[in-house]
Image (cartoon, rainbow, N blue to C red; front, top):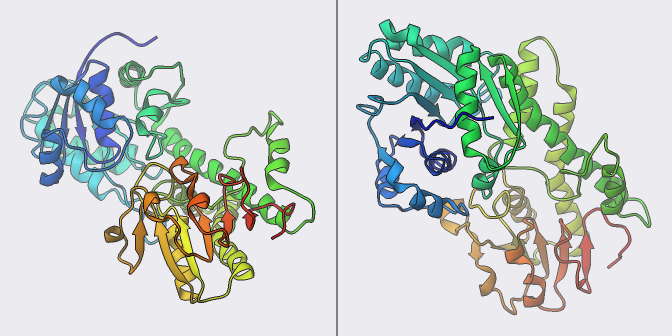
Length: 436
């Protein structure tokens, strides 16, 4: 049971994960200072303006506004702070590892501020995803070196979030798991208490060593991606087997309690800022140990070939030069994030194959893409003349699109969103029951 204590917290990094964390902490009664070096971002947040789409975030920030302040400087932020959360980018390097550059900068600055306050206990929590060994190694050393004489009063934990953009608030307030890597029981208990004060359910809490938690984070995402690629492998098999549906086969497989139904459905490959890179990092860490994470390698191979697979299906339906509408450019519903987006990868392949391509997306704009691409809102495509439409993002915002297109438009539905009522010229990925 969480101890009912409110604390003074600092969150370093006010981006698409840091700002929701600030809102959730304030909503639970904690006082929070958000720090980010991006002056425009901080100015917007100080004015109550969120410049990206995240359901529920603006409302939650407004509710907790009396408990929240934002600033670009570290100075003064730690005068009364008991705990700080670092949630800055850890971009992937060319080898697949995560860079600690921004984390090290943050802990160095925190340590410098704490060095001005002798004999004051403070807990630093690394939320950013890092390679196993980083927190107890170079991150902790950098923090304690900067903290100098105050280093004996400073502790460190690792506690990554398991969230998806577009559902961040929900994921933070209703997690399946609170993962805590601790260097001591006392540090872990402080973090457990504040973590459980945020949630509105009763999640499982795992208190592990720092390295165990680091391994668990990337291993969990690697396992989820394995289920996605397994599903798409079944989809490939069923699509080549007469009178079979991957949806039905996977429903049967998922009914086995040893497997479960989560992430077991045919669809587009996985993308976004977490799944692909965590899976690759898991294999890279194994390589560093002289091992090979063969499942992670196979998972990535299956995922990468999904876009070529969709292009192959499109070639069977319409000739190069045809007009194609790509429905959904973000990597998932309710976000404008296009990092490793399957839809965007398909656009580039289709353009290279000689097709004329337009897109429809609720949040992504043409300005983001760096491509000569006409990107429309769903309401702007009524009676548009396309030879084929491909659904990449299963958002309900796109549910009525087949009804807006001409009757001759062929449909490639990667998710089954458009199957009821089924258009006349319809191809459901992984389905060999319906022929065009």
